[in-house]
Amino acid sequence: MINILTNNFGTLISGLGYTLLSSIIALVASLIIGTVFALLEISHKKWVRVIGKAYVEFIRNIPLLVITMAFYVIVPQFVMQMDGFTAGTIGLTIYTSAFIAETVRAGIQAVPAGQMEGARSNGLSYTQAMVHIVFPQAIKIVVPSLGNQFINLVKNSSILAFVAGFDLMYQGKIIAATTFNTFDTYLVVGVLYLVVTMPMSYAMRYLEKHWSRA
Amino acid sequence: MAKRIRRLGVLFAALAMLLVVSGCGKSVADSDALARAKRTDKIVWGVKADTRLFGLMNTKTGQIQGFEVDMAKALTKQILGKNGKAELTQITSDTRVPMLKAGNVDAVIGTMTITPERLKQLNFSKSYFSAGQSLLVAKDSKIKSVKDLKKGTSVIGVQGSNSVDNIKKAAPDTRVLQLSDYSQAFTALKSHQGDALTTDNGILYGMSQQDPRYVVVGGTFTKEPYGIAMNKGQTNLTNAMNQALDTLQKNGTYERLLKKWFSDVPGFDVQEVQP
Image 1: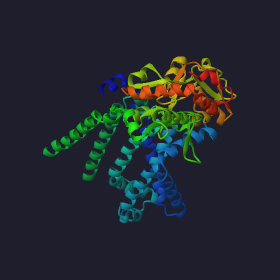
Image 2 (image 1 turned 90 degrees about the horizontal axis):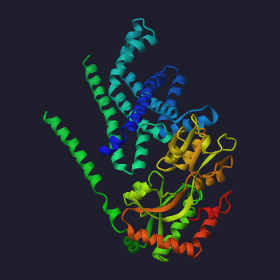
Image 3 (image 1 turned 60 degrees about the vertical axis):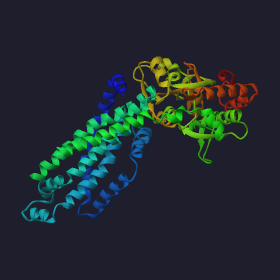
Image 4 (image 1 turned 90 degrees about the vertical axis):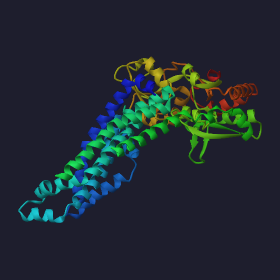
C-alpha cells in the first residue's frame, strides 16, 4: 500500500491538484448559481418561480454522469471545443447548483416572515431587505446542509475520471490498471479524498458552532 | 475524552476490517479452476461487450456476439465435452484483471495482449490472434501515421490497456487522454476531444466498419499477440486451454470462425493475424 503511494506520489498529487481546482471552481460557481435560482424560486412573480422550479427539478433529477457527458460529447460536436476538465467542472457546477438552490430556498423560507415585513415597513426595498436582513440569517440556518453539499461536491468531482479530466480518481484508475493492485490503489485514493473532505467537515462544524453563538 | 477514544476505536476497527478483507478473498481464485469447471460443467468467461467483431452486445437480442465469444464457446466444448456450458460475463479493459483476481471469472478472452508485465500477475494461453496497434482518424485528418503525432496533438486511448504505454513511447510529445471503454473513446474522437484514437487494429477496423467517416491509417507499429488470461497458478486450466486451441486450429474450426467474423472487413488480412 505504501509502495502505491511512494511510486506514484507525483501522479497522485497532480490528480489531487486537479480535483481541488475543479472542486473550488465548482463550489464558488454553484454557490452563486444556486443562490440566484433560490431567489427565483421564492419570487413574487409566478413565471419567475416557474423558471426557478423547472431548473431545479430538471437538473437534480438526472444523473451527474449524463449532464457531464452532454458537455463532453454533445457541446463539442455542435457548439464549441471543450476538454474533459472543463466539461466535468461545468457538469459538476450545474448539478450541485440545483441542490444548493433547494438548500438556500429552504433557509430563506425558514427566516420568520416578520423579518422581511419589519425591514420593509422600516423603508427598505425588497432587495435591500433580502440582502441585509433575510439572507444573512438564512445562511446561518443552512450552513450544516451547505456543508453536506460541499463535501458531496468534492467526492462527485470524481466524475472527471470518466471524461479524462486528470483528477485524483482518473489517476487512481490508471494506477490500478497498470499495477493490477486495485484494492490498495483505491484505498490510497480514498485516504487522499479524506485529506480534503475531513478538514472541510471540521471547518463546517466550526462555522456552525461559531455562528449559532452570535 | 472517553467519547473521543471510543470514536478512535471505531475508526481503527473499520481500518482493521479493511485490512482483513484485503488479506483474504484469495480462496476462490486459488482453487483449481479446471476441476471446478469439470464438476459444474461450465467455464465462466470474461468477454468484451463493447468491441465490434470480438465481443459486442447485440442490443436487440441481449446476446453478446463476436469472434472471441464463438472461440470461448468452442473452447468450452473442446475442454468439457458436448454438455459443457460457456457462461459469459461482461468485462472491460478496466475490470478484467480485478474480476479474474477476485475469482468472478475463470478465464478472460477479451482482446488482451500477452505482455511480460502481465505474465508476472497472470497465466496466459498461447496467442489466438496476432494484432498490432494502429491509429484511427477522421478521413480528412492531417495525421497519416504515428510520426505525425507531434507536440500539440492529443490521442485517445482506453484506461488499463497497454496501447496507452505504447503510444507514449512511439509519440512522446503527444497528450494522451484515457477513457473508460472503447465506445466512449470513439465517441470522444467524434466529439473532437483528440486527433486520433489508438488501440489494436482489430478493434479499430470494427469502428471504421461501423462509421466509414473514420479510417485506420499508418499500418501497425507494435505486435500485440492476444492470449486468454487466467489466474496465476492455474496450470491445469492453462494446459487444457492450449490443448484445446491446438485442436481447434488443426480441425479448421479456428479458421472458419476467423473468416466468419473478419472476411468482409476492408483491408483485413486473415493470414496476418493467425499466430
